[in-house]
Length: 321
Image 1 (cartoon, one colour):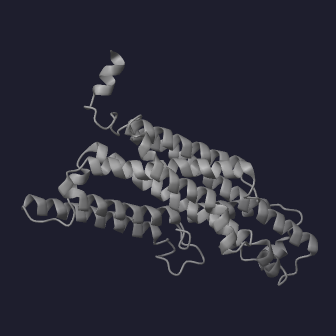
Image 2 (cartoon, rainbow, N blue to C red):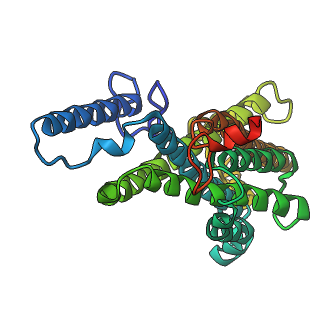
Image 3 (cartoon, helix red, strand yellow):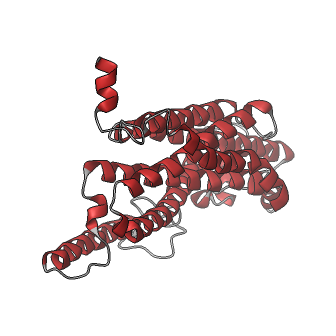
């Protein structure tokens, strides 16, 4: 999407189809292939033949909702692991070690929460844990959209990253456990295959969509600030490739502007626009992740509402009594 364009082909696209981006067509082809695979699998099952994947793993609404939420949370984690290091390493010019240190609060919170969340299974139902976890993810994302700045070591930013990671770590373990316990033991291999496939696809989709989102917001921000800008002249705009706007550090931007007729005042204004637009793109990305987390609470209501060892419906009868 970022390279080819959403609907119309971008000037930097490797190829196009009569000026139209092939990206949406590729997505449609992928959906058709997935549908064809499901039809083929059902035919093999009806003929009592061994399918590549047992559809019993996702034959109920609860299991399909679990897979959907697993797809969402893995996609959001991939989007975070793409956008934040992109901003830290490429935009701020930090090296790989500094980027890893900046991401440490998020990654450690995901890791430890994924391990420790099982201790809450006896106190809360999967539905409650998932709803609370998505709420925490949304709160962390919205908080980051509000407080994020060029300094990633500030306490407010660290708090947001930790909250974001806690919610994600809880969901990764919970959703896999729900999927495993919902299927017979003989289908455990199919559950593992489904988790791996959904995870890989979600990571790819999350990274692609986040890349398209942040670059799109960056391009829109730069173009809006250049419109009727009294400092940036139309002659300078013609010397810069505005059809291929991407994330650049101030150093690289300054190097490119040195090849033009830009004055020191115009260089300073261009760098200011670049900084503001980059930060705005990251804020919009976190806001989008928070909104998606809130929407994910609705399928979370389809998860089991009973704890291990309880008979389904027992918890509700206790509450009414």
